[in-house]
Length: 71
Image (cartoon, rainbow, N blue to C red; front, side, top):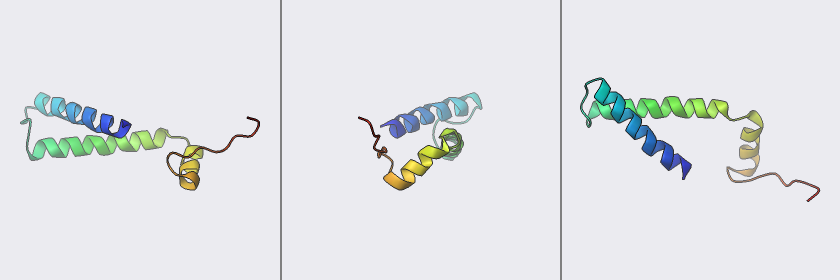
């Protein structure tokens, strides 16, 4: 769900930037701006994820969590 929320929000941010730059609200400029913003934000989010979580994802999948002992 959060990926869809991010994409939807990113589309609105790209629209606002395009309007501020005087570009049309639709067309190649809009799609290039939206795509570039999504790539930049995706890289930033990926860099903020701790390394140990990437190891968990690689070993258990994106929804897996390690079994904690003592419960």
